[in-house]
Amino acid sequence: MTVTTLTSVTTGTSTYRDSGLEFATDFLIGSATAAYQIEGAVDADGRGPSIWDTFSATPGKIVNGDTGEIADDHYHRLESDLDLMASLGLEAYRFSVAWPRIQPLGSGEPNQAGLDFYSRLVDGLLARGIRPMVTLYHWDLPQALEDAGGWTSRETAYRFAEYAAIVGAALGDRVDCWTTLNEPWCSAYLGYGSGAHAPGRTDSLAALQSVHHLQLGHGLALQALRQTVTTDAEYSVTLNFHVLRGDDASSPEAKRRIDALANRAFTGPMLRGEYPADLLEDTAAITDWSFVLPGDLETIHQPIDFLGVNYYSTATVRMWDGTSTRQNADGHKDVGGSPWPGSGHVEFLTQAGPYTSMGWNIAPDGLEELLLSLSEQFPRLPLMITENGAAFDDVLEQGAVHDLDRLDYLRRHFTAAHRAIAQGVDLRGYLVWSLLDNFEWGYGYSKRFGIVHVDYDTQERVVKDSGLWLKTLIAGRRLPD
Image 1 (cartoon, helix red, strand yellow):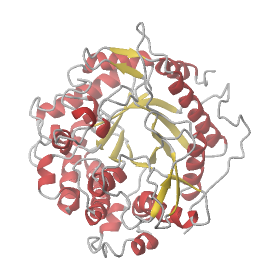
Image 2 (tube, rainbow, N blue to C red):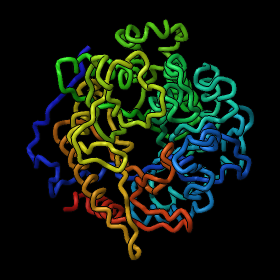
Image 3 (cartoon, one colour):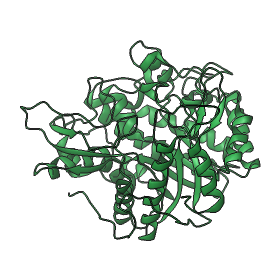
Image 4 (cartoon, rainbow, N blue to C red):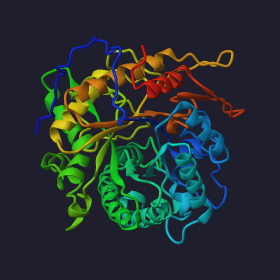
């Protein structure tokens, strides 16, 4: 199978710094966060430990030994953070529910205090005219489930469905937008393959088992939500797509292999009801995929109302010659394991800048290309950008953050989204990552993605220039110059 690559036919500046672009009034613009990255209060009101609590408490796993124990203290600062969102004019807020706050051990009766917190959050959003968009899983698996096998075990998928039913019953009378999983690629390959994310395993078989059981959980959770949610809701899943480039004659094969692992391993089962044949062949030395049981693919292949798209950068690949030093610039923290089971002979090349402080290249054309490709592959499926943003080394000076690099990044990527819409892509909205500076997983507090600056000592919030720019965009429906 070849990887679809499309070229824009829309005229505009080559730098994606177009002016005067207008967005329809029904194009949803907002921001997003994740529970473990902002909430803190890890042992408050009955919350149980998650794999990220365990991982971040393990020496050497997180930059500077940081943990999410306090983070942005959002759990205790809910009302003021809601007022902050309202002051920015956000039309939507995508947040995740912390599974261990709802079921401390990953199963059993719900923790009412945890449900009450998210109920207050939903009510607060609705009272301020902000659409709540709930993500059930953004990586914080209850540690008790990991102790029983984690996502390598199909039992975790059934526990996830039970958890989905609990949250659906509690919030489903008010929430009309639900996402099952955020970036299962990261959960499976970084958590169980490379070791860069919790739980920190480095096992190719475990990674592929997790790919499947996460998706089984997705399908089961959709069934559970549809049985418990009483609003006329929309259902989705969010995937982080790898937009692939090449630089020599071996690159088409490298792109095919990585596309299979990174993209089609998820769109195949979820959107087509099948695993790609080339993926199974590429990984045959690792597993025969016998953990895929009869009926699983039918369960996974549930209808969704839109596909969540997370995009940050591109990747350039080719086949490694086996003798030179293998380049591994895949944009992910390298701790020794591999997030590419069966394709360790593919190398990821250093790309041309400019870069964000994560070392990721800035390529708005990649977002346009991705949206066009997905629209071509799945023409009847609406899309939504559920994450896009950038980390830069922001400086707070005299009560302000003039983050012109991030502002420019957002302007160029909103331009890419506008060009995709102009070419017929059914793109329903754009959620900027992230609302607040926060705990950036393995990088701790060393990277800042927020449109709002957070002083981690005082918890003071300061809206950055990029946040003010977004406020102007939302208010006027027009791309500010």
